[in-house]
Image (cartoon, rainbow, N blue to C red; front, top):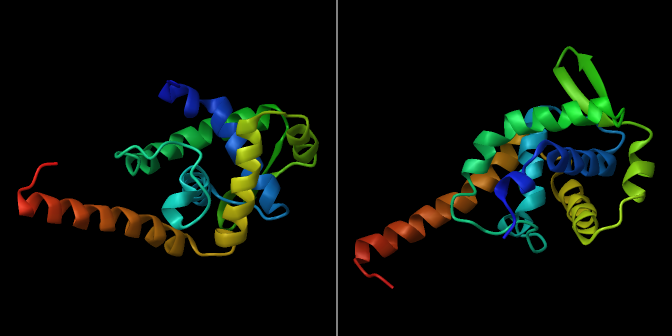
Length: 160
């Protein structure tokens, strides 16, 4: 069993952010978008994509609420390593992969990183130009259907 902190520690979050930003290069993303796309990266099968990287635990919708501060921690790690560029403009703060991001990622050899790269490619292709509202609605629709299924099960009074 892998401890939850291992899956969502600052370094692991930083790796996911970096892979997403490198795949989307030269586009920049704000924290809100990174939160949504990080969920899509980890739980791609929820959104009709390839098998999810992380397990389909029942309470995973709660991850979204906790991701904001974790994403900020990951960005701090990337800033210290000069792997991300911070852009401040009229729309706020956003982040783009720095020039060294591709070289850094290409040095990493693990099955997990390979899965991150594969899923981030899918995420950017499928959701990269979609609005945040669209992505949020797609994620919410998954949980809404679960809620309906649970309600039907509960109303029937059947226990399996």
